Amino acid sequence: MTKFPFFDQLPSNVRNELLANAKKMTIPKGMELFGQGDNCSEILFLTDGSVRVYRLHESGQEITLYFLEPLEQCNVNLNSAFTSTPAIGTAVCETEITGFMLPSAIVKQLYTTEPAYQQFVFGLFARRLEGLAGLIEDVRFEKLDHRLMNWLEEQEQNPALITHEKLASHLGTSREVISRLLKEFEHNGIVKLHRGKIEIL
Image (cartoon, rainbow, N blue to C red; front, side, top):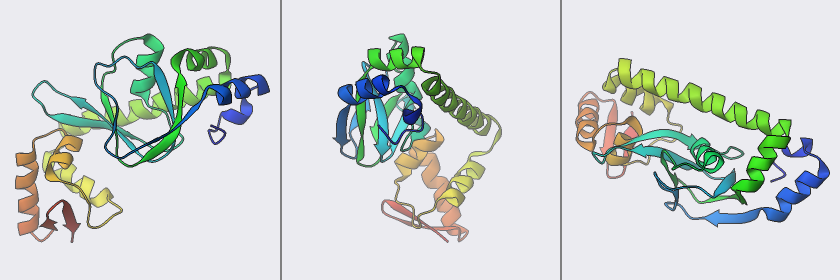
């Protein structure tokens, strides 16, 4: 908890209350933190690892909304817990994660009384809104092959360890479409395909 940027700006009694109620968690890769439609009663303060947050369509297709990184909080988690409404997406651990869980009532009180935490949360929502606006723009105006190329160019790891199905979920399309585009890229010497990974040439 002490690593979060707002923590040192809180009064000592508030810091002590947070520490007293924080449950340290280590959660394995692949574990679902909450599902779309769940009501969140606890709020995650992530310290290490990565969490994928996605929305599931009734067709069964997924689209990634964002990735939660260390020292961030999940907007879907916050919104559900603060408003007592069902979560609009699902959160799954991309890696093993560590962090702290706190009861929503304590975090809501923190938000109500502490400007430092309010600014932290406002900053989170501003970044997510900007990211989602970009996602909508990409889906509406940019061709899928361009979006796929952009995704490949952004990868720091080569080869990228990802399945066609998972990549389709990130980009909001079907596995068959992604596989076809990647085969075209392979034919043109852009990538080399392996089982469970994509080598970027």
